[in-house]
Amino acid sequence: GVDTCCVPRLNLLQLAPGGHLGRFCVWTKSALQRLDSLYGTQTRRASEKKGYHLPRPIMSQPDLNRIINSDEVQSAVRPGRPVVKYSRKKNPLKNLGVMNKLNPYVKVLRRHQALARLAAAEAKKKGDKTKSKKAAMSKEQKAKIRATKAAFRKQFAL
Image 1 (cartoon, rainbow, N blue to C red):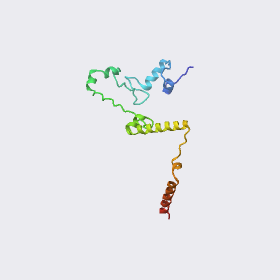
Image 2: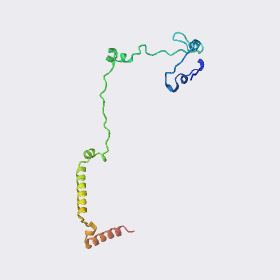
Image 3: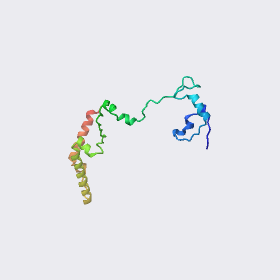
């Protein structure tokens, strides 16, 4: 489609919708003259707006790469700092190497746990039913433990 617009009501959204430049614009001679009187030119101030002047470019040489790499600028610039690499903290509960650094005994504990698991699996295959510690105690040992517990409770009874 074709859009027309009055110069005093011209805005950026009409010239570049969505912030994308590249809209094809056709200007009339009277529209360009009205823009000059409204906003002024580089040599003449605006006649319709009081005290308004077009902003001037800050840089006279737009080749920024050439300026930065020039000998004058490079002689005044301080040298770059060395890049410090930070390592990410690793979770010792998930990373065995980090856990070994924090607690070297973990390796021994894990080995004992693995051996206990293997022994339990072997016993299960053979069909051995090992007795629990409580079942393996004699009646005298059980009575002694019961008496100790009762004495302890009696000591704190109100």
